[in-house]
Image (cartoon, rainbow, N blue to C red; front, side, top):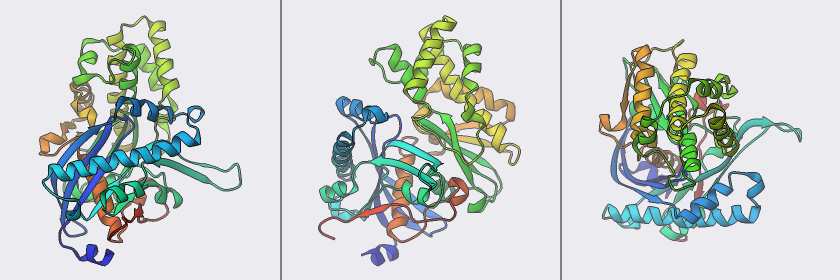
Length: 400
């Protein structure tokens, strides 16, 4: 079976992703062909399947150890397996295909905890990460070979287990004569640096800080959950950035941590948002002013990361933005203003004819395609791992 996939000229793979914003499952059906070094990718179909509100609420409780008992984690692991399986079958149907037409599924799952720094309390340098969404459930419901739980192999090899998307970005976006930046703005922001003419060892990437996570959390807090994000950046556009609050937030030590580095809801989570809401009262800010300020925090964190970690080595010509944040016009405008100082053009995935929503799902389809063909699918220079590994656990359906 695996030898057949390795030698197959064209493969159809479903990639699935649900991120720190917990909006739902992004499912992309992708056709792969071409060489290992320069794969050709065709997006056949894409869908976003929102999580039911009650499920989304239960997932958020799992982000805090004090509200994440093991039985709830186990239950949600299998429930998400069912939801991911439904998303996979739905995008296959949308493409006018059947499950038996598909070669593999790659599912990132839902991260509920990410702790990539070594903890040596028991004598071993333990790093760990937890993604749920049981791959065996997906395989059994769809009848398709499923690859899941990607990050753990890199962490086992001493890496951060993140970011993983740069592997696909290197293969698909690199240029011979220009340095470009690929900025994803999901719940967390992360940037991939593709130096001009670079080989895989020259690529580097890291989490820039909060992406949409704080904006979403602040909007939800201000509206008592009636709104879960700033649609189009409307609230941010009406507000005025409070420089004093912005300066307070910029002092967070994460922004000056050395590379490689990654972060998540463990750092920029519930307590972080509570502190911001307390500071709203301290500075006497309107609701829209708070949204504008945390929006500019994301824009600043991306520009600061460029100046601090990238510009000393590489002068970029443009930064290409993907993820849900690319639809926040206020955020993109703030980025344009900040990056103008460096003569770096800000573009979004749609400017290149791609799909911002589908980008990460496509990436996990590519990682799965490599895994089932027995090929490494990491960039150790990005994650800090000792060597490249084949990430992903294989779940076989009952009939192969």
